[in-house]
Length: 133
Image 1 (tube, rainbow, N blue to C red):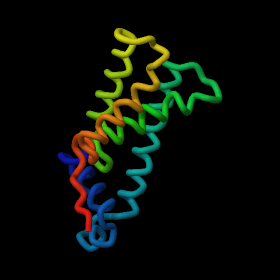
Image 2 (image 1 turned 90 degrees about the horizontal axis):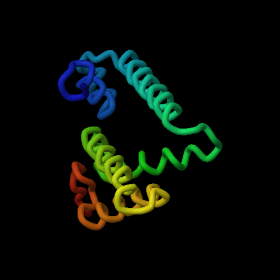
Image 3 (image 1 turned 30 degrees about the horizontal axis):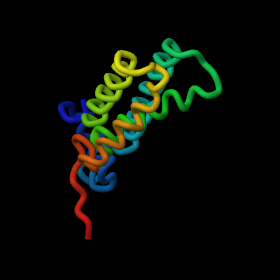
Image 4 (image 1 turned 135 degrees about the vertical axis):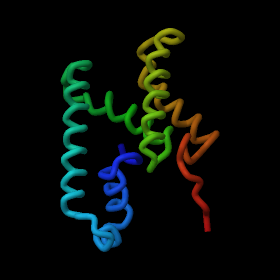
């Protein structure tokens, strides 16, 4: 959606440089409202899906936050496609943990995958290499 549709290109343009997008004729306030609405809809959907899978308790944030952060780091920060690929990698690694290890170690797999990716490829799978000055 972000690369193939006009609204996706407008979202990326506004995120990159809002004043330049405004000069090019993109309605920046409307695009920003659309982006916030889209993010809210996706957050709501993810909350419903997590609520269906897990029991609601005060410590739920750790059960969900660690794999999400791991997916973003593994995929490469700033790359939506990389985050999706990282989420699939983390999800497969955590679910396959039950086959080889005790399922109680499922949460530690995210940390192990983060450490492995940061050692091998610090920018993530699809992240851009950062030049140091």
